[in-house]
Amino acid sequence: MSYSKTDFGKDFHWGTATASYQVEGAYQTDGRGMSIWDTLSHISGKVKNNDTGDVACDFYNRYESDLEIMKSMNFNAFRFSISWSRILPEGTGKINPKGIEFYHKLIDKCLSLGITPFITIYHWDLPQTLEDKGGWTNREILNWFAEYTEILTKEYGAKVKNWMILNEPVIFGGFGYLMGHFAPQRKGLENFLPAVHHISMVMGVAGRIVRKNVEKAIVGTTFSCGVIDPLKDTKEDKQGAAAQDAYWNRMFIEPVLGLGYPKETLKWLEGIDKYVQEGDMEKLPFDFDFVGVQNYSRMVVTHDPNDKLFGSRGVDLKKELKINEKDITSIGWEVYPEGIYRILKQYGAYKNVKQIIVTENGAAGNDKESKNGEVNDPQRVKYYKEYLKNVLKAKKEGVNVGGYFAWSYMDNFEWMEGYSQRFGIVYVDYPTQKRIIKDSGKWFKEFLK
Ligand code: BGC
Image (cartoon, rainbow, N blue to C red; front, side):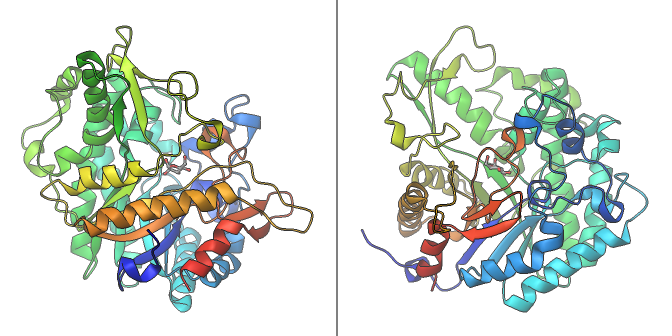
């Protein structure tokens, strides 16, 4: 099937995405406070190669030329996040005018180029001062987040209509407060369960503030999701897959859609009741205008009696699934284009989901600059072509997909992987901060012409 941009419809958003901590740098400039990712990356031996976001892509100083590059690739939308500790260096209280000004300039530049800005309110960089008070485990976060959202929406609401509350609850919640991989590296259900409930509640709390302060607001939030397949067609493997599905794909979206926590599948979620106060379950649902789907790969799992959370584990792609090396990206994720079609169908089947926007999709690679100054990334070009084909297939079958954002505009700080994994369609030569549009970026330029 060959396809073109017009098959996706006239009003389709075509964008790229970034996040504040991953690109901005300037970590002590103009009054910015510290976030939990500054803290973690500054501890020796934590992030690969001891990389930090101190400088990152220097987007704080280079946003104008970066937006011009984006425009030259014919994108009409840009998804970025706001650094909470730039706006409120201590998390609450005193506002930092320089931080406010930076995002005004960024938004103005987008608008002057005809690029529609999409704001993510929270992409994981919690102010350290708030983590010191318990972070997401402290119910007070509902008030802290409300204060922050009030400020943002009053400042930028006249210029920006598209808002996303959170980026990927299951990743920052699960990796940050259950498994302990990501900042703030806390572990255990006693941290995770209150965090889950507060993360779920905050979507409605902040969603209502956006609606109140922003005229004609289009409010969404984003979820990391992907299909989970059982390795074998056995009862045990299927049960294991269902448990993982409840965790990765259902736990955060279903309460907000009014369906409650998936406790019948994940028994240990019953422990959340301890943190649910009277009236919470009524306040929890929020009628989002769109849901952001962020998909990269799929997971294949098999029964594992030793796994206490799911009774299953992910399988080894090469040994157990016999996946060819070329179908695994440099970060170790399987290239599985049909997965985006299937997860769009899964999310599209929820009655209350009005629209879906693919707010992230992309592939990691070990890209290098060639002798003639190009960056050739044929695997990524193929990845995008195949995934987009599957997005279109879901759309043609009735899933209301309203936009697509490539992750990422440029190579950036890939969390615990530091700068070792490159997801950009624009290459960043970190020592010089030179940008080079990769072949995948050139492909988009042609496709979006
Ligand atoms: C996140 C990004 C991240 C990307 C690739 C998503 O989980 O939102 O911040 O860089 O995936 O790992």
